[in-house]
Length: 183
Length: 131
Image (cartoon, rainbow over all chains, first blue to last red; front, side, top):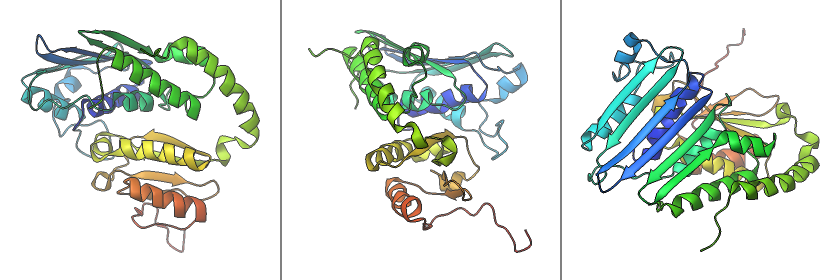
């Protein structure tokens, strides 16, 4: 994937498919300590040890429409090629948590990209899974919680143009405030 | 520095939007709306499904066409990603492959507006005369 935001979009969909009520996306960047970390945590179905051992295999998938599953293997490869690491833990009935760490200054580390677009697409998922997005940089922290948004909107659809545009600029402005400017 | 938008601003906006929605609501039965599903799994995302989806949402808004755009999983046509499924009420669903922005625009202009089929249809539901 050419952007970290695309990896996040891809893997958060796994959580949604696993019937998660909430998927937490936690990004931590630290140029001084040279890491860029993505944590995706859900409270979905989880996996047993046997399944968990197979998820990094590109020829394993739970889908029936095709025989390959590249989402996790590609993120793992990408992180490891950037001087980082990949780790995944899961408990059946509790949920799954995956951590991918990239070398912040590594030349091959993809840019974050359009994270706002990713969050907006995830917000309007058909299963109604909630999204918590937390982004930490050395300059500060931004939290975005779809449960708060839904509470305020009181049933006004998220797909309404005005609401979409508002959320888009709200996320962009807040990210800019902690020094994340879209490349 | 300009003020950053906050949740309090959202609360204000909600009231405005809600009164507008009430005006629009007359024909807003989801079953009467055009429904477009964008395949958004690893294969789709890697091929640019996100741009396609954003483009569809913006262009349909821009042209004032009432339609629901949602994401769906992999439909199994990874070789032809990005793929979308277009359902016009009362018609059978049609799946298109290789939908970049240009193709998406063509589908809006021809399929949605004129009910003409566009190239790059993925034939999934062949029916014989006996069916």
